[in-house]
View 1 (cartoon, helix red, strand yellow):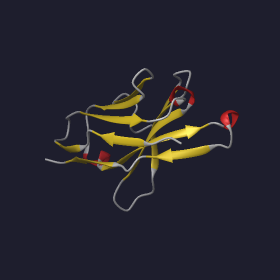
View 2 (cartoon, helix red, strand yellow):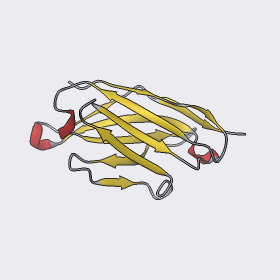
View 3 (spheres, one colour):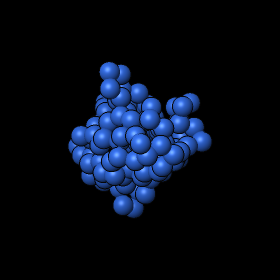
View 4 (cartoon, one colour):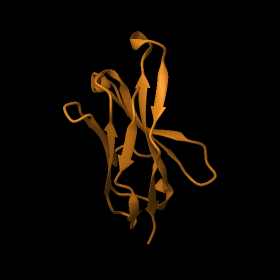
Amino acid sequence: QVQLVESGGGLVQPGGSLRLSCAASGNIFRLYVMGWYRQGPGKQRELVARLTSSDGTNYADNVKGRFTISRDNAKNMVYLQMNSLKPEDTAVYYCNAHRPSVLGPAYDYWGQGTQVTVSS
């Protein structure tokens, strides 16, 4: 069982920065694929960034060069540094932990979400 708690959302002006944090429980955190997803108003949830257990990364095209995902296995934390924020980045951001099939049935855990609003 993995529990995820996000923090760090808020209101920021265009061009500003925010860092989201996700605290994960569970002693095999380092083996999971960790990711950040977002869901904007009237939109479907979409992948923002993903980080594998071997530190491979994937980013959505519209955040490449602006967002950075990272993890601290010692602290069971994953972060999303967001720079040069745009109004279209406004969304609820969700932390995701994907249990790969090599560890048992593949399964996705989700946090409760944190609101990010980019507006002047």
